[in-house]
Image 1: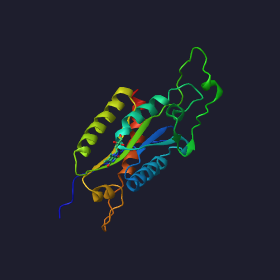
Image 2: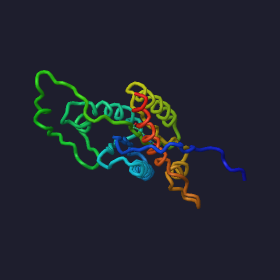
Image 3: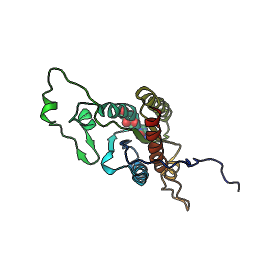
Image 4: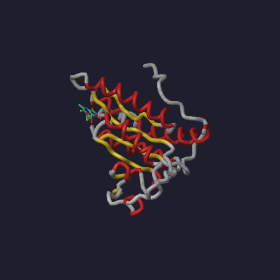
Length: 208
Ligand code: DLZ
């Protein structure tokens, strides 16, 4: 059997993630696959030196919610000092609950709020798993989410890594998360997305 020519060629450069801050925004639909993909991405981020404290994980219900959440998370990294991106969304990051009772200076802002850069995210990884059903839902969501995620990265200048599986059935999704049911478990694409985030986060700093 001919070996497939498909696949990602590793970069010749080894990118150092130790100075990067990366957000992962993931959907909760099809959680078994999502969990493996998120773990794969986090493992590669850490392998490339990204500090655990600089990896922020945020969840949303489904893939359709990913573009807005990514956009808010990116915007939230530029809010007033003392607030976190989580404060902006009023949600949870990386296991630590961002308080709804915000620091005093954020609860009672001065008359003129000076927006100053907090620590911005160097890249965001959007992770979702869409599995085709019997209606056109899949086609509409795949199309709108991929276009919207592209728009977020072009509008903000922050790399958004496209970690959305668009699978025709459960097996395709499982295999792309390294969870295949056959002898060949497949490859965890989350790992590629972690590496892509480090590469694009580093490069976009250089290109700035
Ligand atoms: C509704 C829905 C369906 C049917 N399938 C998926 C899916 O396979 N993967 C996914 O991430 N989300 C799915 N959703 C949820 C939508 O993305 C979205 O959360 C809801 O329509 C609410 O906006």
